[in-house]
Length: 397
Image (cartoon, rainbow, N blue to C red; front, side):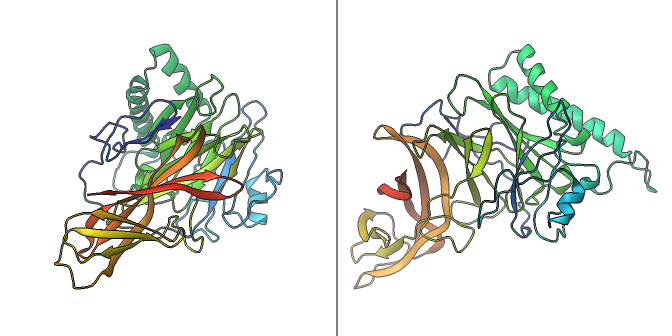
């Protein structure tokens, strides 16, 4: 399944998709671009990723499942209270100075305490609207946004009302402290039952990374909540799925664009496996795992012939020649002048030679610096016990 493109933070479509996928399984998303806004550069808080199975709606039992990048702990080791979270080093508040970079969100998506000053229902000294009034207004906006997105997804009134009611019962909006950013209805695991993906964030921390959550409603399971202090929760979710490793379980790749600029933009992608009613972390392909960025290094060489370049991939020890407009006159000998920038963008599950694979692109720049885009290097990765590049090519600009 595949759903790509971009929306504004209220989920409304915004234009044309910068590229198209090859052989996507399921319906292809309508292309969209970001609206023009002045981005505010912010520093991401230290990295912390946790995936939470929300509280059982019947028993109220709280279950936490934390997946770290360095290693995946036993999925059965759970904490059932905030006190336990404090004891094992998990910060259960949402304050900016989180000690270890990991926030725990309860079944409501965030507690009143998580949201700082919001929650006592009083007016401040300046006579501003009370938090309760603010929360009620936010809930009305959430419903309006949801109706818009549900209608886009083709839901009838009775269907979307049922979906929205479930989200409210699970209190994923934290009583109005959180804003609905995106809603997706797809049969992610291809079992004939549509699944829901919902992204929310703190509207008082717009364009601040790590201030939201992506909920995955898989079949009849309680929702799983994805949190990551380096993930941008303020634009549309770019999402696709497929059984990448051939074990009969679905992998879900999803991402969102942040506030960074340069190259193809500030894209953040994650990969999860849905297996035995749990979500497990899976690494994206990369030639290095020393930094947060995932990608394949490419060297761009300006050839002596006008408007001619070569792309060299050290991992494969292969070179592809392509044409693109020069920013400067070629030298008398070929020279390395650029490479890839920022890592993968437009990552998605695709069908390749009768199986599912991952497709991803790298932005390539030339002698004119990062603003001098000369093309995109595309890769198809297959899983054979580890990631392998099955195919690569360059699309010149």
